[in-house]
Image 1 (cartoon, helix red, strand yellow):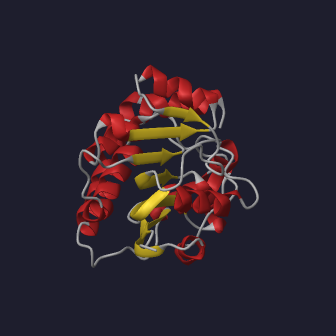
Image 2: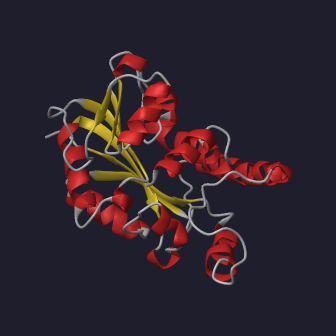
Image 3: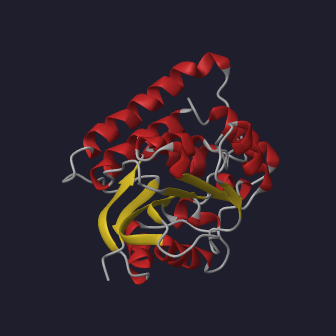
Length: 255
């Protein structure tokens, strides 16, 4: 990602429909597996500009939440939010002791790692997780959905849900729940990326861009769709069959 991408992320992360909606979806599927508490320790392995570190306080006190990112620009923006416990390092080589955390989150990070970096990162998450600890992993879905957005943000891969589950299980985890997300807006994304953009209609590059001032209604509409999905996924027996993101929650079983 380029510096301007981090700048856009920092500016949009709080209210832009995708980020706001995904936080609600994450809560819907993760809350049942994270009791949290004063001794609960959390790592965001690829924290970006840091808003998710603030959001993760729903599970642990601020002093027990740690953020790591490889990009210096990301760390700078985290510091602008006055966040603590930050480290500049790769998700493939976590600078933490074995069995340090109760929850490790990976929000759209594995897709950006080169070569077999995603498998190395999953193994590292396993290493630093306490026995019976939980990981939350989210990644962009479907290789055939690769577009100019992926190129702009330097994404290396996309996953089907079975592919993501397999990589997680191969590291020793037991998958507790898996689902796609951002399903209602999936058809619109297919049209935008594979029909409109190739025809030169709309912006090129990253999709994470501010909407024009007169299009705020669209942000509200998209957010409402995401919140509907979050309500649907609140029931642990419900999962979505396709979508723009693949999500897995898994546990490191007791030895």
